[in-house]
Length: 316
Image (cartoon, rainbow, N blue to C red; front, side, top):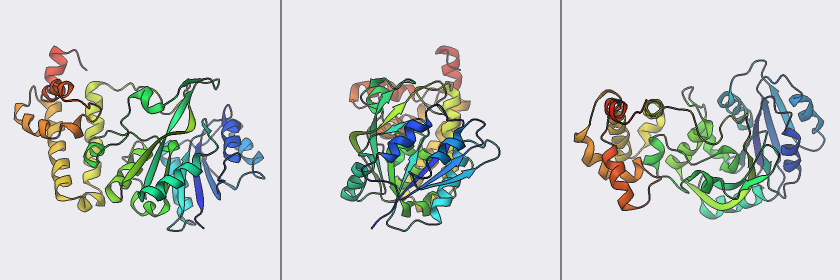
């Protein structure tokens, strides 16, 4: 029988951690092993974890100093890799959410039905006090249900790690997580899409908590050029990994042209020569636009470089 492993990262999470752990206890399909990496907490997080040792199959790893969530999840996945079998499953957990009781049961059924490497559920959205203010995380953030491999290569992501389940066999592609990866779940999704694909279900599987201390939550503070630089960093990183050589020829070509395009967009005024390429790949470059007419201004906007955007559009 397939085993279910959970990899969890914690950091100064005493405020909500007990609620999260209680929701793991209440799963209709309990986990067989839970690896928790504490990222140098200074509060009672570790003590709370230890108090659940008789109710949950916990392995607790403690970092002396805070290293960030990417490093914490990377270490947890490396630990899980020591014991998982090819047919096992892995879920990722944050410290401040509440998992709905049928989370594992629903996602395991879907990953088998779809025969993919990863499956993604939706989430109800709650505030710091546990009050629900959204029935769908995707709807609240206008997140596409599915992204193509090309769209994922541009830096777009539609996956939040605490809502996914993936096959343990995917770890061969995921690990080691490159040091330039900022968000671990974005990398895991790319690896799944590049191998056997991923699927989504509309059903909420967790209550996703938004509060003042979220590592990643609603919105971001990046500037226009800052986003371009992050996307360029991501694309260049992909180009340097073994995954690049495994991409189909059209995938390699798309990534190469995209990197050149973003580099020029950061340094030039206008890029009219890229207009045919932008129009051809509009669905990958602007996956959040679904209709033809709204796509036209986005395509035209795509030829504007940073210098134009700064001078005439007030972008920074």
